[in-house]
Length: 411
Image 1 (tube, rainbow, N blue to C red):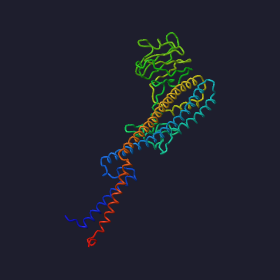
Image 2: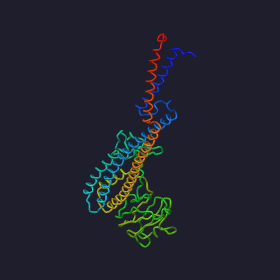
Image 3: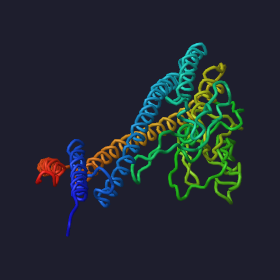
């Protein structure tokens, strides 16, 4: 078979182009440090690398969320801590105001200090985050949760902004003011006591009371009435709006069989225990009703109002003391609620930190897997590069000689 000079030249050129292409590919691998430059280099490995990179991008996004969550929760925690400082001061002032030696002027001065604490509380509860969103308005971040000087009605909703910080991990980055400041039961959590219609003329006060047996507790609106029994004793009888006569138990008659009053002695019925101190007047009465939600700011306002109201006689002081006892109990329940929320906030921050560590560990693993698929073996690559370079040089030298060949050289 005859091979023309043109054919030989074409074959030589094709060989050099192939060698140059291979050399260029190897050079790109060496310069980049990557074994796979194009999908065609290893389609299966290329697909796995893309999948792993997508995982890494997702994990980086989770870590960004985790950082944001930590910052948001730190703001919530700091704000609640500042609120607690004000509340502890209000609590101390309330105890100070409960002493019987203060004048109306003294109580008024305490009220002024408390008013300053209340304003600070409302400033703190309306704290915004770096995006200008109120942190205690639930989903309604653009709405101020409370307005000073109003009836302190909550303006936000009961939602909670959530962010994803891991494959199956979600944590809150905001808290609803309803949950923290509204969803608090007054009294002892079961019932609240009061001084009837506020018309008592004696100087008696009633305790906040407690539950002796939750299974026996019957929720109702009860009235403790002070009467004179058939023996001429100052006595009491208890009626429920739904239960009817409770003490003395039927079929005893009232007020003839009413129970003689003993200051400070326990009054027990339907799982309830309260006590009355001081000297009630005949016709005085105290109420017991199921606990209801009472927001923190209304509680503080109620204490301030009591301090601002002048006391002119023993009956006024009894009403005042009853009011302070009730509101002080509600205040302490609100403080406990905030402390519980702060525990939850701390747990959220801890979860964000843990998830961030997990994400970082996963990213290290994925990058290691990518490296094992993609990284170049430099020793093999450089050996291959040198071989290809030698082949190219030989091909070029051969082509140069072949190109010069001519029949005239032999004539």
